[in-house]
Image 1 (cartoon, one colour):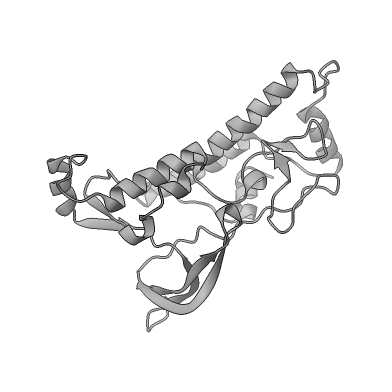
Image 2: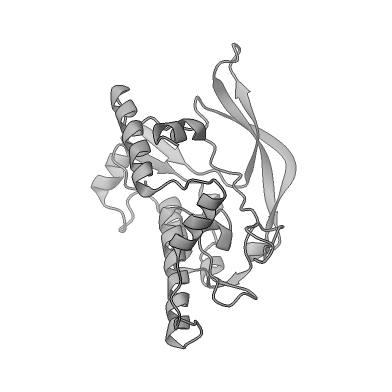
Length: 254
């Protein structure tokens, strides 16, 4: 996004001043991302690390984007006719505590951000899978060490149920690689019993069918995907997302 043509980043230098020491021991992906934001926020036009042409292009960009930290959305503000969003009211927060244990606490101040579109991307929380699988209800994760579920040898987890709802697709990919590495290590040292073959999905499928549950297969998903793309093409966009699960099931003949 920092190099996005026709756009320039607007980052508050005060948010990034003095962060270099704080991220020394951070995980490599987070450290690299934060270092990039620090460089962008604190670099002044004309410094050697920025090309003159790039500086000029950013200055002339018709669009800009920014990041606002330590804000807690409180309310979507409507237009007078109540049909559209005109802004978001946010509570300002401060961090109390250190590292990953830090908590955002409201300061009592609020601010309003004008906008015409609101996209919700917060609020996900994992749920317990089974009483036999440990679960940290406060954090919404399965207690684990590098993907190894605590107290249940041979069981592994990955994604948001492993570390909480943070990061982007590449974060989840790296997280999955980490869990896969744990599985391979356990196979190498003989911690996993691979002497007997397992039925795998065949056993699961028979249980589901005995309960009257019909699984959605990959070919079923392809039908839903094709329908979404076709609807989107008719509307001049990549796809029209189907959000009703019952409509999805009707499409695949369930």
